[in-house]
Length: 274
Image (tube, rainbow, N blue to C red):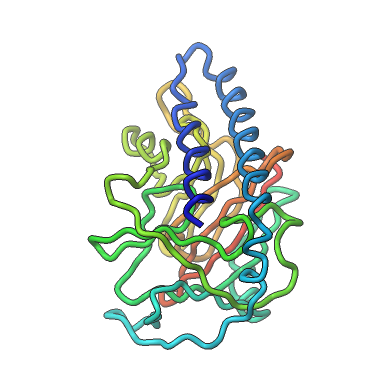
């Protein structure tokens, strides 16, 4: 597990500065950065695929009912320190109906209700996986599949079943923040969350208002953040967003963590553009 994670983070870190190009060549460098990100993602998938066999049994195991408590705001939480992902047709319809695609070819899939460990909440500083914190400790939770994160469409398990997500502790000073987070913080905009793949001038982002969220692709032009194209309107709050481009694809897979006020849910959004 740790070898996998080190390899994954090494790929992510290696492309972290791809967007720092002069303004005059921004469009060319954005394209180069996109190609570099896709090559890096392809390498990452190959590395993880080589190690998939050692985890295949774990990824197909059914999970029993977790021992639950209630946290300070009344939400259910787990006592085993794992994230429990519950799946089913009722959960899928509850969240899928709240995500309205605004582009042809968008697919919403693999929805799960997440039960978080007691005392922990979403940490949205990183754009590449599910991070939780209790205020002092930071944990990176890993999807229970051969990849460790959202697989491209066609690679995921087609059978709906509940499972758990294990974690690793990460020192707060070593949490790799997405470069786009600094961009939206330094430029006045209505974006609340963002995720890129090594490009601080081209990224997916979330605008929020009154328990609704708008998902779009944004670019930096002439010192301003503008929407490149819309992707979806979401009739829920979005607590976290992270994106990884699958190899040999023009778009990618966006992971959304949405909440209905009590429970967080995970949904994959495949986009034909990116």
